[in-house]
Image (cartoon, rainbow, N blue to C red; front, side, top):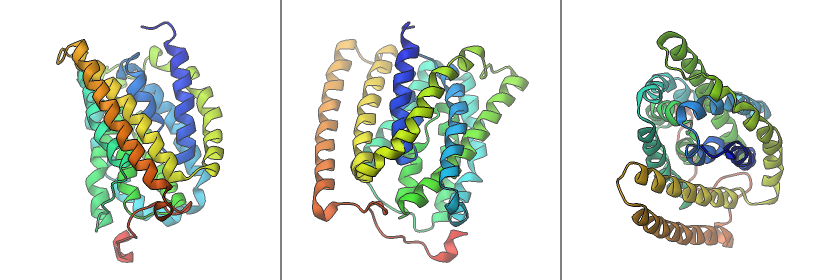
Length: 308
């Protein structure tokens, strides 16, 4: 392992905390794709989940005035998380390291690209949609610590205001992180899965300080830029990181040669660059300029009776 891995992890965590403070999610979806090049998911995941319990609780506290207003919309996802969390924990405990990496990258890349190009397709029945995505969100989070991109796709497509979105996603992420941490402890105690170990806990000092500093700075940062512009810019960086990680694990799995992986990576970087230029250029146009309070996309399509 790289002897400077803790330093790189700390810098990466600070950058991810800036993003999380600005848009309400993104910490693990930025840290995990890069950090699993240095640490296995069994070591990294528990440390990230412990940190995210505190981060998500803090973000929910900041948006607490909207909890009652948004709970009915977060509840369908929250109440269906647990079966997915159990399956994801089993996968983390017993799948091979590189298999988990493939799942991380293959799941994250299309979700990031959909957000980069501004994909919007709202669920007509929001409650049924939440019940459908909840188990998948729980599975992904327990296995990879990544749930922000699929959650963002689901919630942003439902026409929420910026603050409603942040409150709803904070409620879901508090639930998923606490459920996952409890499940990790249970599997370690009952089945000897070794998910809560000293190497995992030793990463906490490396992660906590960057988060404590980065999240408040990220909140201030969002006040000076367009939220939609900033979000798509972040998604472009995320796409580059995930593409690089996928190329490395493809070589490790002996699917492609090292030379072929770098060629494919160059093509992927060029394609992501073009998509980013088109996407950000569209945001700059006056007709496409998003409101600072309302994310772009279709108006809400649910009826009040569908909010459960």
